Picture 1 (cartoon, rainbow, N blue to C red):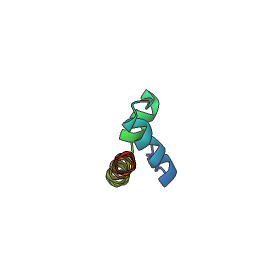
Picture 2 (tube, rainbow, N blue to C red):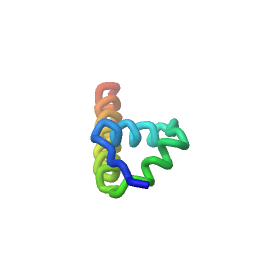
Picture 3 (tube, rainbow, N blue to C red):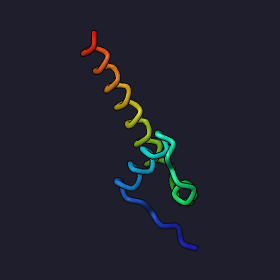
Length: 63
């Protein structure tokens, strides 16, 4: 079976749904069938840094 690659939007939605715990089992398995984990790692790190930045901004606005 040929491994298909995902585009950037699919990687982002996959990372976002995984972070929030709503990733489907089919998408989870599809992610592990990808030839490279690097796009998922990069988007994951950027996503977490973005969440931290948003939380810091909310806290600074609340204080």
